[in-house]
Length: 250
Length: 311
Ligand SMILES: Cc1cc2nc3c(=O)[nH]c(=O)nc-3n(C[C@H](O)[C@H](O)[C@H](O)COP(=O)(O)OP(=O)(O)OC[C@H]3O[C@@H](n4cnc5c(N)ncnc54)[C@H](O)[C@@H]3O)c2cc1C
Image (cartoon, chains in turn brown, purple):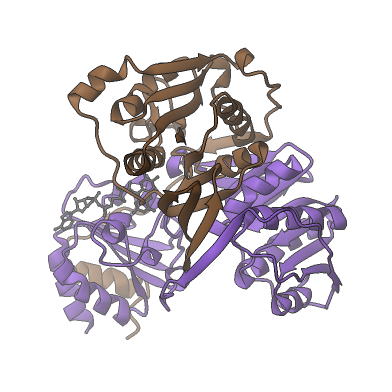
């Protein structure tokens, strides 16, 4: 069975500083989104349960071969990468086209796992867009995965209900951020990661005509916080504040 | 401007979408169309709340759990209504639908949109970006647009003169998934998004002190809410009580935040509160940057003390 996990290369959010309301991205290392790591862990657990080959697909800039090492160390067997500096800053519809093209390069993908949303944009549309491009069934917000006899039994967790769904493979799923606790690689795994197979494609190798961006960003600024930041020194002062702000109804 | 079509299987969300659609209608004259699937009651309500036309699909074989079929239905309704703009709810159901539908209709798509404005006839959307660190103002540049609006970003539409209701026949694609079972999660009666006052506890609060948090919330006429790890790791609350990017975005009159560090994924959920008081034993905690009132203290003392004073 071929288990495919799609991961997005993003700037490490913990390291983004805000200067004059603008995010400073230069010098910020690239990594995979946190929920993508849950998707990878879900793939590893599925492989442990039913066997198979675990393939990571990702699109990003030329540093992607470096970024993907972590995923290969944790448990992916190989990676199909679209690494091209022309692929930085794609929008969701473009990302979906690239990922679909990469997945087409894989012989018989059986289950393709995405995170519920990327770490940076969290828009949650790429997985289902890829499903539509490839003509596959999809189930999002999955909190449990079982595969048997070419059928996936999945629990989709909505805000107010859990649905047990059955779909035939091949299919696409997106998993919730709390489906599992991603494992960390051991030192030997990290050392071996460099030797795992990587198929690297430039945009021109993918055989697609990438369509134009569908989104234009007018501005992207940190919100201004106009808080009073008054120090409160004691419980009595706190009660006073509640009183003067009108929250004590007596 | 072309028409707009709104769809959500949740009645309250669909009424909020109507309010957003009204904004477009006022600015551009766009006709407001609504779609309901196997829900006559919702069709009647939307028709009486400002939808010019409600398209009703009635087909017992259609399951809301099959996003491909629903996307196909929404697409066909939009074609019928000549609506280039589709508003969905940005709950999980709506977001799952959004990508599929956008791909089917060759539309650009934005989800988790918290605000809409018309700039020279063009729709401008605001949404959080970079994990909530920034707020982006964005436009969809394709003529077809799919926009998923965050729940509670717009008021629900009130009643208005009745519009037309039409039955819509659809061409169904093959069924690709089977819904075996549905378990409703004991819907907590409390919706923290409706609370005027929130007492929010983070990992810097001990379990024994939660009774005090509840007592304070009760005395102030509010509810208790929490940071994500308090629900997902400690399991003291269900996920319905999480404030933040992956929880709920709330705008209470007062938020008292105790033992929360103030990571941006948390603060996006509360930064629009009217008044914020924060308690943390670390004077450098990020949460203080968001506070009108900042108290460096042990949450234990403050919770017990406030509960006693307010009892
Ligand atoms: C994609 C993504 C989505 C996320 N979504 C959310 C979300 O929706 N909501 C959310 O909350 N988080 C979310 N997070 C997690 C978020 O980044 C933080 O990890 C989380 O908010 C931290 O919770 P906390 O502040 O309660 O805990 P901690 O970060 O552990 O902070 C505890 C705080 O309590 C203080 N403290 C400790 N003891 C005391 C005491 N005795 N008295 C007073 N203060 C004390 C400490 O100084 C510290 O500031 C998300 C993360 C990611 C990556």
